[in-house]
Length: 515
Image 1 (cartoon, one colour):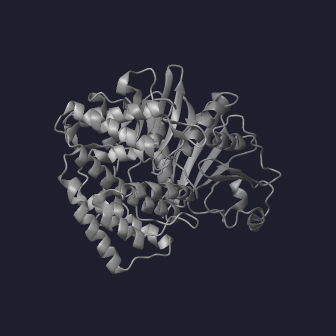
Image 2: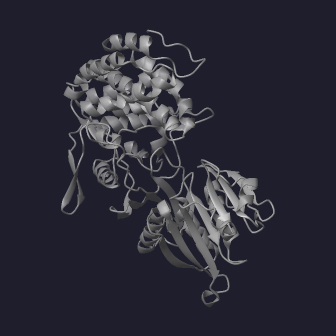
Image 3: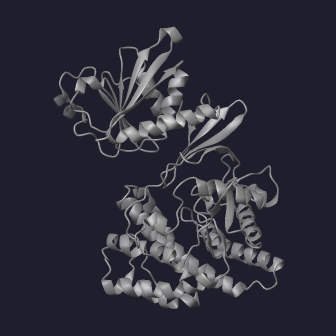
């Protein structure tokens, strides 16, 4: 058991308390327990209310004190939260009656008056002890924040985050929650009189289990393990005329950034959401412009250090598609035999020789609607704001076009996909008469099959391993895209193999048919 970690700070008013709780909210997740201790009127409920409102993105949300209800549950966008008040608890055994013993799984728990349950609290928790500080003002409080057990690391990071914001002069900014993604990163808007900025909390990616030739999955497939690739690629994109966020402040070692805010204008609209054709045209043009010029393999990062962009090699691509038999097939009651696995790998290894031999460019890797912002005030391809590119690799140009035109989260009509594919090819041929349209179309089909095979496995893993079932709703769409790509003549053997060995995503989905 690690030693507790503690730091103290003064809170001049409720606004300062709200800022602290918003900062802490960036660092917590389901299963975390936060206790709020202090005398009557010390500000415990105000602190809990501030965190709940921040997580709800609603400054006016009614958050009553649970003094009489004892426990109040909230279904908040990032995770469920339980707010409890133990003031009227006389015996820790009463926790079972209010649903706190055992603690609810998959939720954050905020507990006021934790001393009433002394001895029954989890060993891993964060305690915020609040007290009056009349010498600092009538509404001032002091907060002593302690992390016990595994939560000690969270408190250490909270202290580092507060020091980063203070040094960058953003400590007094209003915080506004932003939706996260499937990674360990989290984000907030920082609102000041001089504008709105983005705070990125990007802790170093855990190494994970060494399952792939002595490497973790993230290392084997070249996912960014810290914030340095984001900074290098952002600067590199802007140098080539692409709208990536300007970086105003950075702590590269801790993984904190303050960047330009591109706003919220997206590339989709309607219910259900559908692509905005004009914006997809601009994104297609942006990729064509980026791919027509030779791009460096190493980018400057620090005055005396550079960042080498990793190559999207065959082994990485094979490991990615391997998620499908590893995670998706068992979910569909089709756990593959050793013989089936060997066939799968052999087929893919042979096919991936084609992209391995193709010219390489920057592959931003997640070039799709959630990561694209429309910048209407800018001109030409600069209207396309790109915000997620830290996993950039050197690979085939077709990959990012697949990401855009076969968006995993929204339906892209096949007619629009074909129109944009044609638009891209025309742009490339207009800049280089030797551009091979047929070879590019073949690579497009191969990378589509690779990406969508990987996504079937990725979304199954996010559900089963990470407790994120909402990703499963995208699997039928992935299945449709996969059918499209397998229609290419080069992929005829894969079409037959998948039809024989890969069941559809869910009961009721149309069966896989050879095209």
